[in-house]
Length: 98
Image 1 (cartoon, rainbow, N blue to C red):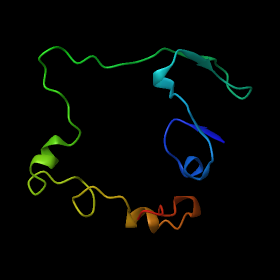
Image 2 (cartoon, rainbow, N blue to C red):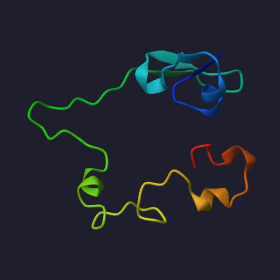
Image 3 (cartoon, rainbow, N blue to C red):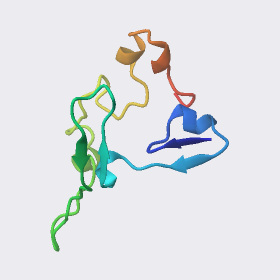
Image 4 (tube, rainbow, N blue to C red):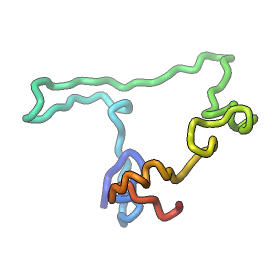
């Protein structure tokens, strides 16, 4: 069983996955015995005004990927990065889908 705000490798391998919120999604306080301060934060959200243009992630790229390339080695959305792989870090191994 695992509790994560995003789909991690641990969540992928778990039999039971419980949802968790990020610090932007809850009113909370935090800190530890190693911190000098206790931190407080409140929920955050972005309000889209009526009649405004709905935001679509990488809309320009989706409309014309040749003219609006993403700043990656291939200019496209990458699920695998050779740059990251070249670091040789075991915990940054490619996912099973790559």
